[in-house]
Image (cartoon, rainbow, N blue to C red; front, side, top):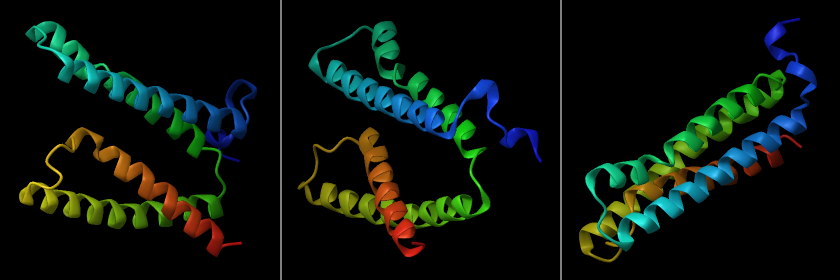
Length: 136
């Protein structure tokens, strides 16, 4: 059996899922706080840059936690993830096109492009639930 698929240091799949969730929530919180701070007042270039880039570290942590979690999946679970990601790309693309067109009309001009990951995350969750229901 491939050593990468074995849990490291007694970690279970559930523990890894909790780590992904924790990093995801941290990334979401950091992005929201960072966005609120940036628009709330003028910051100097140095401090503004630190505030703007602060959410990057939690997103990197989320990436590595997700990567470790994926190593424990069996073949069927990986297939379901792949199908969900494929649907996610289409759904997120449609959402981004709609928002872009509405911004051109001036209807959705206040929407922030950095929040586009919300569309990706939401469409992934919806796609995964659809795929999971199909394989039951």
